[in-house]
Image (cartoon, rainbow, N blue to C red; front, side, top):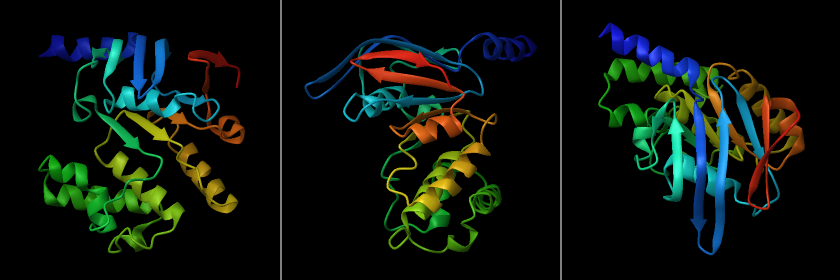
Length: 228
């Protein structure tokens, strides 16, 4: 037992949290070929690039939502190239929030823990804590229909955090927000820095400047690191 415990600590210390090794992905006629990257523990990595360059395809591959054509994906020292999304332990926020129309905000946030059959009191406590952190406690009994864009983003982020993932993948989390709401969301995401390893997709330079500890440009099918 002790050996296993210290082995896990060692892996976390020496292995990148997210590592891609010569990964190739396909979306219809679009291809990404031989991509490699490393993201270390606690980094807030932002992937930027022009629309259509493959940023979302890349994130879907990391999250297990799109199969690899070749290569390997390693998360926290484990090869997850053929693992299901649930087995990868990622908190994922899609671009459109993807909330369930028939669920209350309370049920949306606690969804992953309910699937795990966690204790009801534990779920209630975790949901309330996240709702307060995201400033949406007053929305817990509302349904998704009728929520503003900013409210939907906060609910989706709380849902992603509820299962206490070590990795967060955020696909354009600030898109289609007005300036005031965007500022509030940036401040909220700043508060998460250091507590999670984050991969954030955007084409907005301001988000890179405000959030990134590690910036990656996806351009013409290749990834290169930019200064921040």
